[in-house]
Length: 188
Image 1: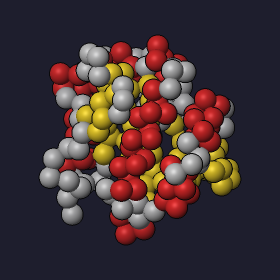
Image 2: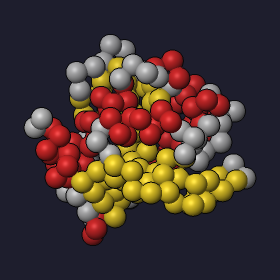
Image 3: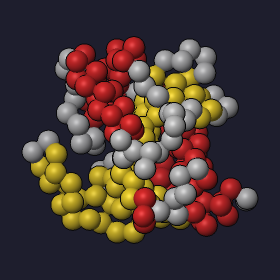
Image 4: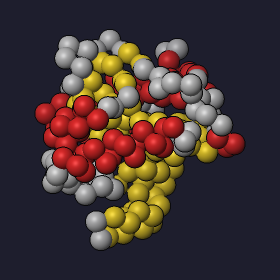
């Protein structure tokens, strides 16, 4: 089953969520070459431009195969990619998906990811037919935990040594939000 005929572009007050192109490779490299951005990420810090190109191509193929969708986050003022967000796993027959996201450090603490994720979550519930959206976060990633709580996600527990990357096992906090909870929050 195809996800969509074409990549869906989303717009918010300040942002465009769009497909990342190879022409965005330098901007993607700038994000992923910052160790503070990749600190809690299951990807190594990029050291070469071709790593960003490889990531862009992989995400495009995962979209084409109907497995995942990852939007590039760009400011409306200049259309430069400053981060990304998307559904990193989608279990269609269970009506649930897991989200992932990252943002260039220069744009942290400005409400950008909150704005982007609201649009993405709305899309997930309204267009993808999701009933449950999950997020798994390293215990030390306080900023991400606060972001999820701000959006109404609830902590469900700790998945002990659930993740393995960068040569170590990682405990992850599991968060989720249900469609009915999201809908009631939007009406407040």
